Amino acid sequence: MSPVEVFPPSIPPHVPPELVVDFDFVHPKGAERDLFLALKRLHEGPDIFWTPRYGGHWVVTRGDDIRRILSDYETFSSEAVFIPRRERPRIVPLEVDPPEHMAYRKLIAPAFTPKAIAQWTDLARTLAIELIDGFYARGECEFMSEFAFQLPIIIFMKMCDLPLEDRPQLLRWVGMNIRPEKPGDEQESFRHMNEYIRNLMAQRRSQPGDDLVSQILHSEVFGRPLNDDEAFGLINGLLGGGLDTVASTMGWIARFLAQSPQHRRQLIEEPDLLWNAIEELLRRFSVPNIARVVAKDTVYKGVFMKKGEQVLLSACLHAMDEACFERPLDVDFRRRNARNHSTFSQGPHRCPGATLAVAELKIFLEEWLRRIPDFWIRPGECVETATGIVHGVKYLPLVWDPQASTS
Image (cartoon, rainbow, N blue to C red; front, side, top):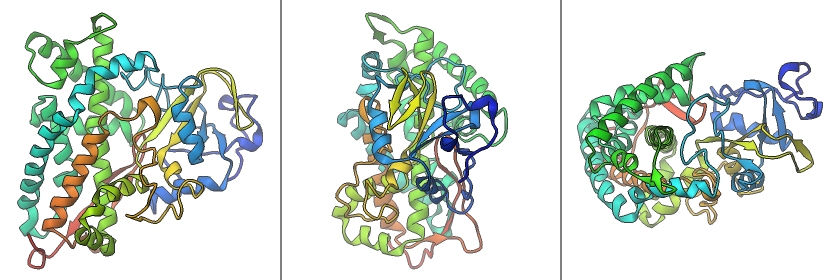
């Protein structure tokens, strides 16, 4: 990486030239070969640097700093968690700081209690089996479209009582937002999602059910009913998280296991390792790019940051930091500190759906490996990946020998 010489519009005068690096987190150099290794190369440069991309923002590369900043909401606010900033109602509770944050978080918390999750995990297991049985005899599948974007997405849509026929268009709109492929994708996505959510709100207010959306719309906060922007922000946040992150994580895990028979065999032969294995896979293939806003002029590790500037915190940079994890690029199902990742964020903004996500990943691994213990990427094919707000897998063709696999 070399310093950028001239980007006057987006290099503030207080940023030292030696801390300016031309880095595009949506198109990191080398991502076509290995997205995570492309980001890992940032550890070769400054711990904190400024990039002029997307209007200019800070990038923090070291794990301990990422963990501290995510937890320090007084200095680094969550008021805008995406880069670049976008004109829209704030996503609730994701873009609300404590103490107000907890009041909104309580509105969705009942959906993620152990009892509530148990109801959906039973259904998820049945669905996982049905999906695998549907393509097992073919000896092949495109994993993302036929499994990853089915299992967790259908469960989420049932939680919200959304028509399953809406799944393709919702996935397309959410994908355009979090991994835009061309200019204008985010704006087009917002137009579609805005109309969809507003229509959904009107329908559920007039005909409420016992689903999560209805519960949100008929909740109170601070002793009053939710206003339209608050309700929109809550539902928008649920859709954004529920329609991609678990599916993307499944894609990275399936890709890894397809290339690592020894890890597949270890999970089959030592099922007691499964819980820790999931945490290790969540660490090694950590998908979110999270942003914070400097809440007040501050000096962090000798770097002066001005109020209002954004900071990018890529969770995988924490995961791949040797100062935080021994041999961080290796996948070690016995790793003792595997849970210390930032995949679900840190502090008060830790993902409320983390327990459900882990449960769905467990079901995926159990049912898939029980039926298809040996599988690989179709010879001659290339896996397609992309990044943005979330590192994603777009295309993952898997094959196996149905005669050799056991059920």
